[in-house]
Image (cartoon, rainbow, N blue to C red; front, side):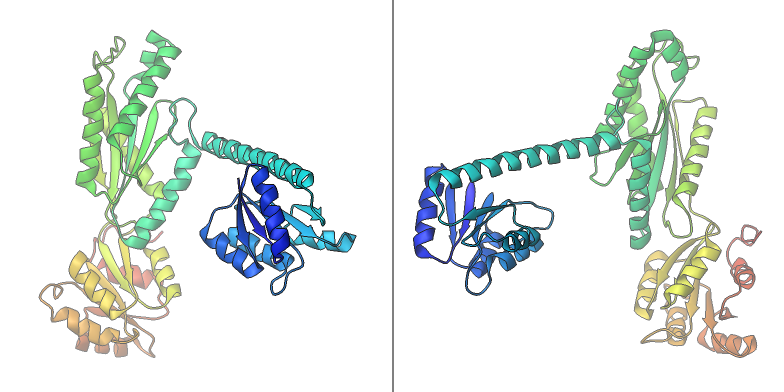
Length: 434
């Protein structure tokens, strides 16, 4: 072990260094608490033997700072002190110490303490390893070692939020082994399990990016999440999987549609996740899977899950953005911006179907931003609705018309009026409130 000795006395440092070497370990020397902290930041040690009474930072305060620096990483700390009062012992334990040595220190005692701390460290490491293994087991399906449904859903929700924040595309695939019940009945459950394991291996070979997720969703059903993947990418992966399974030529004498095991795949791809939900996208993938099965199986069907139209909402107020997102959820895809600069950049890059913009933005206001958009060849055709707090709608509409906006809305926004105005520009039949 590498043992850090923190001792201000040169005589004791020399003696304890000798004891540590004799016990078969490597001493690392610190002459003060301050020096010990510097060493801990730069050098990995396995045990700390700390003098309590030192000038400057004493042993207790040094230990508190070390524990704070290490966080969850545990290193045993043994105090060395000339005091044996109960209060001193209690203060040391509260500071983060694990054991005490009372001066004068002997070779036999220090060797015994080191061996004891070695055993404790080994037991803690074994426990940590077991806990990690248990965590993995709790997250994985026992047969395929893919994520189980619960863990997959948790991880997928996180990826969903990342896609929303980054305004990135995201795809989900649902895969079902065709006529698996007949396969199980004909070949038996053992062979059925081997078939499931083989299919899961194919998925692992075809879906390889670090952020991709694969899970076992049910008996013979699998689910795949593909971040940063538009519709064409999802279709490519689905076909790679389907063809790879087909090439295995696993015999399926009980299949009414093929002599080998095949899979059907349904997928849903979103270009923008804002304005929809993860559950909604999985539901669309499930419908696509049903379509694939109804088409004769051994096929893949991927559909765009984007709601009708893409709206760029520009407002620096988080409450307003949240309200608009809640109102439009399920009706259209939403991307958001808080400044004029961000609005201009997103409008040119993404070409939204509509821009809903607050008139009073920080820096360049909505009025000037609107004029810039309508005079830019790349964005002049995008309809703009200005939102503003004012005494009358006619006042706001006049203001909006001068800026080049199509129409205007008064704040606070009324959800029915918002849907009505947006419906004039985007899929009017699909935009309605219950």
